[in-house]
Image 1: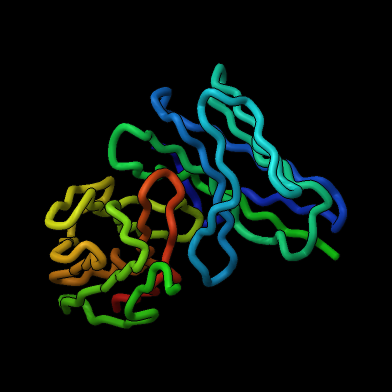
Image 2: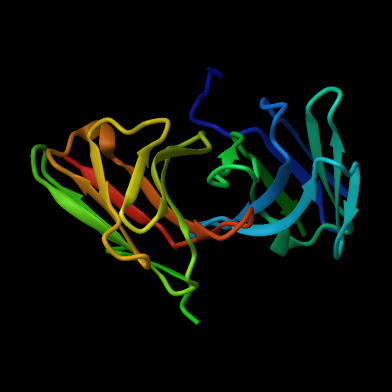
Length: 113
Length: 110
């Protein structure tokens, strides 16, 4: 398994910048990919999802890109705001079974005013 | 609409004590999950349930038991707590791929 330490990967940005958070997934059979946002002291919250038959999906200020060839997922946040500061997790799941979300390690996003 | 509610929010246990964490959802979801989250790590699946009366092991099931006697409730039990079980525990439910999470239970075993 992946070697883990006490500290998450961290991305520090200035308010107004665009942020890009990356994630590698492992299961070629996964057909849904989801980004979750976890604020301090709270449970993860759904941000945006993408199906495996798509390579891009846009939401409000967020865009998710999927590259199945290299099993890579990214979350782009436009005009990042201090309220975007949180830990971001990607998760993969399969629709044919029990929809179990399998989570990546997470990235801590810090937005400086 | 409460969503997913976890009880308790905080607990301190002595080594060897037992306890039960309760998860309740009011969205009529079939699937429910228990995760633990440790510093610097993602969420790791402990046990899950695909419906009332069914449970299955996840990635890290040792030391835990679960029950799903009613569709809306998913209980996580620690029979004999160990310091290695100090963690934040999250319950989640879903009907498809978007999971809804509770606020978490912070458990410390001393």
